Structure formats: structure tokens, C-alpha cells
Amino acid sequence: MRYIGSIYRPPSEAYSLIVQMTVGCSHNRCAFCDMYAGKQFYVRPVEDVLADFAWCRRQYRHIGRVFLADGDALAAPAGDLLRVLDYIRSAIPECERVTCYASPGSVRKKTGAELRALRAAGLRMVYMGLESGSDAVLRRMRKGCSAAQIVESAQKVRAAGMALSVTAISGLGGKELWEEHAVETGKALSAMGAEYVGLLTLMVEPGTPAADWVRSGALQLLSPREVLAETYALLAHTDSEGSVFRMNHASNYLNLRGTLNRDRSALLAQLRRGMEGGAALKDEDFRAL
Image (cartoon, rainbow, N blue to C red; front, side):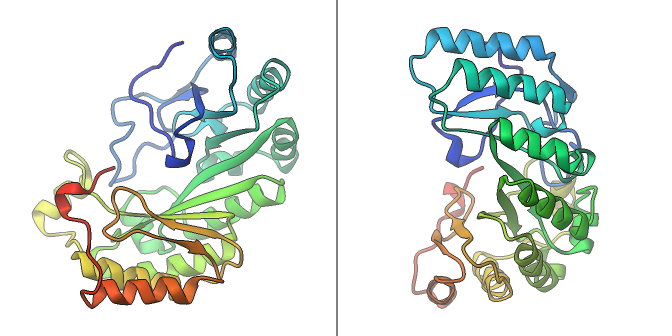
């Protein structure tokens, strides 16, 4: 089994077999992210990927889930992905689901027919980063696409029959753009209608442009309770019936979980308690990515 560089996965893929379909991130220019900074993006030869799966099949009696890494596995050609999915289906029949990260750009480059074929072959869900629904924040953070393009990609994924897990980042707009970030992110999440919504909180990684901006004062970070106020506004502007909402990442000051829209009032009440000092917030030293 070969891994190239550090491997990252969503928290929900903790018990999944992880095999790299691609290496690195196809965009790799977001100002807040250093996950794939040391990797040049490329699509692995499909024969190497299949060899990794064959090795895993020999080693492991049961493989219940598969996550295709790295940061944008959907950027691989549809034909390569179909070969891998067909192998999983035939050689690992007990596998319940296959998932991967997908950038909005890689979704846009796939046709609807290709996405439907991938779903039929076993790609059950993709993880996509919205980060913010504010175009001003997305431009500053060098996301490489607009909120409308991200929403369109999300809708394209869902139209193909795949489940969608979306992440946004609290505090990404700083003090200057916090309200716009909250309101527009809520609107974007409403339009995406994802099955799962995850909310992280900005952590400034050394060596990133965001770290330089914080040091120079160009980006002013929110305090923990300001983050909660922003989250309150975000949820108040989110209408996404049935979406499973999670704010339990290691980066978050306060852990929340529920299902929208059913639990929104309870979630807002918990945020109010946190804002008013009635709930303990995670100490900065214990936050992590």
C-alpha cells in the first residue's frame, strides 16, 4: 500500500479504507489552507490505484467503506474512476459506500451523464467545500470560484443522485465581513440542499497568506463569542430541510449537532447560551485541525 505525503480525510471517514486516486489538490491556492502545500497535483495511474486495492483485498477480510483521496479525487478522468469503482464492486462486494472530495471545478468539468454513471457504479457521496457564500470572502481567500458556481456544482451532484456533504468555515470573513459571510453562507447552504452540513472554525496556519494578513492587521480574527454570533446569523438565514448539521470539529469553540430545519430553534438557543456565557467554550489551546 502506497501513500504519497500526508493523508487527509473527513471525520466521518475515520474507519474507511483510504486509497489515493489523486495526489494533492487541483486548486491548491486557498489562502487559508496548507493541507496540500507540499504536493504537486496529479492523477495517479489507474493501474497503480487498482494495485493498491488488490493489496488491500489480500490484507483485509472486511472493507466496509472506501474513501478516495486526495483533495479532489473527482478530478480524475471519468473512465479511470469507473474502472476503480467497478473493481471495488466486484472484488470488495461488502463495501457499503465509496466517497471522495470534489472541488466545484471538477464537478463542472464532468457531464451530468458522467456523474450519473459514477453514481450507478457506486460513488455514493462527495464532500465539497463551500467555505463562504460571500463572493467578497471567496475572492479574498482565493477560492477560485464564485458562490453561484459552487451552488450550481452542488445542485449538479445532487441531480446525479449522489449525496452531498458541504463544509463552511466560521470566521473566514474576519471582523470586516462577518455579517455578509454569515448571511450569504446561509443563503448558499439553503440553495445547495446538502444532506450533510459541517461548520468548521477558521484556524490560521503558519505560512499561509491568511497568516500574513493576520500579522499585518489586514485580517482581524473574530473572538470566540463573535464566532458564535456569526454562527447564529448563519443558521438564522439557512433554510435546508432535512440537512444533518454538525459543528463538532476540533476547530470549533462550541459543539452543536442537529437536523435542519427541525432543530434550528434549539441550535440557536444553545448559541445564545454560549454568547451570554452560559456554556463553556473550548480553550484556544485545544482547538485543532
